Image (cartoon, rainbow, N blue to C red; front, top):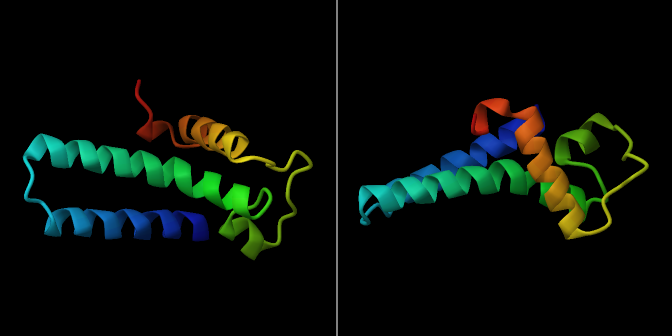
Length: 95
């Protein structure tokens, strides 16, 4: 639940910043928002797992141990994050 809250808060902050700086055309702002959504949903988990050796903030708070195959590189974390985006959040993935 903590991870979801952090993701939602990050998206809200980015949308507010986009609304304030929305001097560009509508397609540019739409593309920026879509890019931000993908970066937050995949990037949050990837960066947390990479920086904390396999656990996100919510997993650390719950006290769950890191998996045996803990993330060792940013590339590995990014691959796991993108796979998680497609598997765990199917409403966000293209059909």
